[in-house]
Length: 386
Image 1: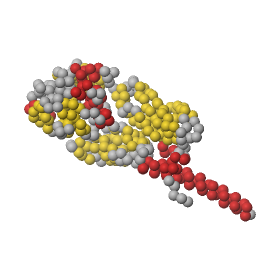
Image 2: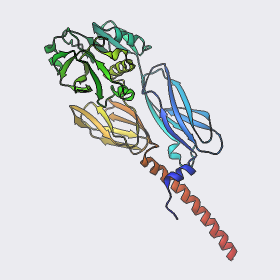
Image 3: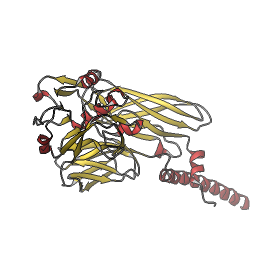
Image 4: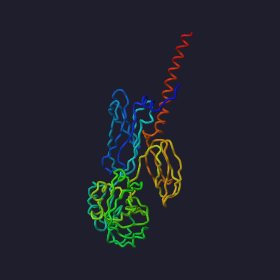
């Protein structure tokens, strides 16, 4: 028998596949959450099929119309009132290769985030938060806040809250050394933020591929830089539970305030500081790194998997690192249950490993079909001989 070519078997025998899923990583509670599936229908005729949707103990079924020889889009909308992590599984009826008829998705439903703003030069910040449609709420007392913004404050104030700290001309540089950074001098040379470290905050900038123009800034040393200028100057630094930006968010300091990435970058920064953002959806073969509180063992649990993983330390922080081999919904949790991180894994239809995995199913089905045909022919020959 000739060696099967998995790609061809996949194309001939696999009538349906959910190729990809799109949706928000987070959504405000009581707001619509839209999840889009892209379903490849290779059948010769149009089909009307049920899609089963499960989320925890909640299960529903909807019927969808699929056009033959086309990549179809199906949109599922739901509204969740209770904040928390929600994991979905979407399933089509099985065909010759059922492995790609299911896809998984995790979304974080968040409450409104309370923000306390202290200092000056906050016009653009305030306008951006007001436009968030309830995702961010400005409060007047720091004790009510989930996160604080300190803008051009003479010296850092300890409020026992994660903070976005913006540096302007009124600060006393030496007073900020207690944060773990050194502020040397202010520069008035125009530079552009073009280098972005892979980080939850910088994802939106990396996708848009837009440079950040800065006209006035402090030179800062220390911490973990997340954004660099083209000359290597740090323009955003993570220090402990704080994010330090060495310039004010005003139009005389930076053109960022007029950029389409200003609002999403501000939102992502505040979400990260309040631990409301993260990456929750991965592909088979991705190198996953999940930050955990300490160096003890953590439980990794999936549909058909449960094991203990030990974290590794980098830059003073602990990370669980893992490369998934199978799709599904997963959770990493501490053994006392206080820490939990939910995420989903799906096949990457563009990767060779996916083609091989799917090919094995198709090969088995094709082999079974040929064995049945051979058995029938043998039976016929035996009857003739008798």
